[in-house]
Image (cartoon, rainbow, N blue to C red; front, top):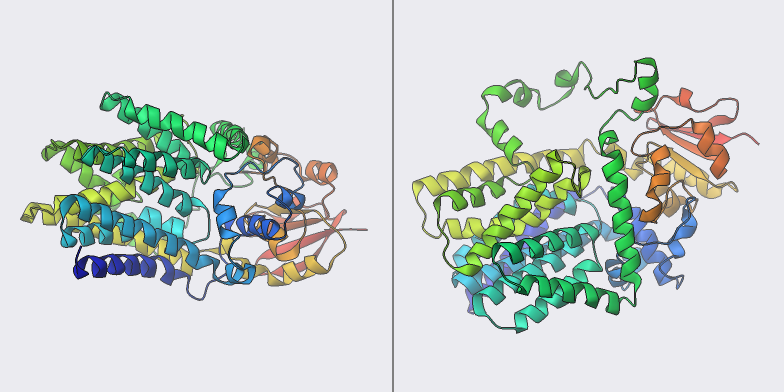
Length: 504
């Protein structure tokens, strides 16, 4: 490895970091899961244990989310995490870019090819969107990519040390993120069938046993929570994306749920030209085929027209094609993962697709360059959408809009807050210390169906059962008439939000 290798690795990391981080400059208070994750970390730092965070939630139950990323981040100062949490995922994703650079270099001995692959990864829209707010997904993605890269190196060299790495990083995956676990399970089982090999299954078995042993049995709770949240979404996935009040509107519309956009949608949207020309716009249809990661189209081209004979190349190709296939199945078939999170399959498609794009350009031709140019343009379009959404259209996860509300809640002796809709639920306890109607136990998610993903029961039912003292309403989504004016009074109106307080 010469100086150009190290310069290339540093450039790969810097490019990824800049593209992930710059949309957040000047916008520190953005996120949904951010504040729940920081609550968990704060409780760990205070010595209250992993279940310490449960005291902030009205629905009881043990915290059964994979714990490793929280324990890792609890080593950092609370003040730094509160102020700079938005740079954590860009830093972690830069590690993904460096891992990709190193893997491509080891297998190609070409710094140029490695740099191309890492640049393409940095432009992948799916992972960009995960990096725009603090969450545990990128931590799990790093471990996942390290596990899969180790398996590729095993197929390349046959050295058993790489299988030990697969097991070690696989254990980290299981103890870090549920969706990463799901994808790793599907891939290893699929590899065992496609390559007619017991090695992936033995690795999977060792990973599961290792996770249970290392966590002293806690992984069993994590697994049961995974089952619980999957059952919840399989039951309620049709509600996601509906008008939040659709179940109430349906009572006066003969049971028909309204999925229509506003009549003036095109006039309101800055993308009106794109929408109006979509029938004759080939880029529109390519994005429909491969949303969130247009680079995933390149492995399909390779599968059809570029024969791979070497086993590790076929493994990477299967990795890319299978994750793309999982996405389509989850989108269009009632399937494990069928909910808004099905898009996450493309996070795990980004690494192998970028890798294959680098190899696709190993023997550049006019046609290959044209294919890469098209998918780069598509990715830039998707990236621009994500950047604009962060800068302009992030109302539902912008906590800077509720500073007066947080201040009032902190000063009040009353407790119990319900958010309609649920967007700012995790921010309430973090910024005010109040309990909210939610849970950290995935096994108890069914109790959330009363108000998430849509409101489906009379509000009074929740207020009485859980002794709720405050209701925060986003008036751009929910009419204030939902709140009983004889029981609650509006006390703060702030940026389109109204905070109602229960009358004494």
